[in-house]
Image (cartoon, rainbow, N blue to C red; front, side):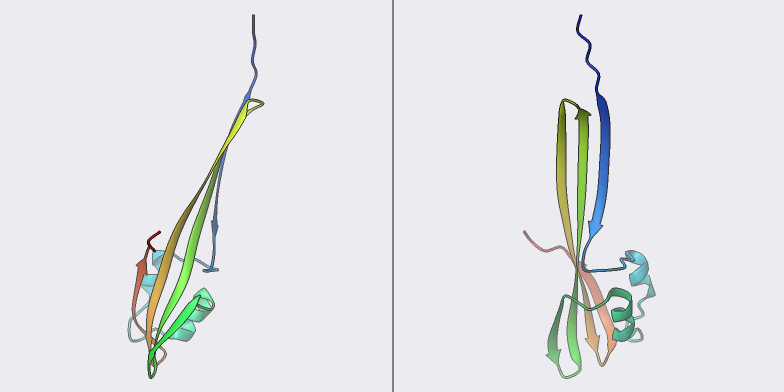
Length: 110
């Protein structure tokens, strides 16, 4: 007769980068194009990853957001399986005269 004892556990965790205080769609719901200031945006999200000057008083701000999901399945003492998945998003804000005039999200090709 053979007896096998094992312990099974499953762990998952998410880590985000660049956007220190991610607000998801609630952040975008608070933006009023032509009224919300770039100072407000900087207070909410910190410094952008990239600023591209478009012309006099016009710029394009990019914030990077990477969500790293780690999943681990353990069947002790037999084996352990880990999987890491990255989801990258860019949040873009068009700024004119210190006001947000447009914004959108993209997923970089990779």
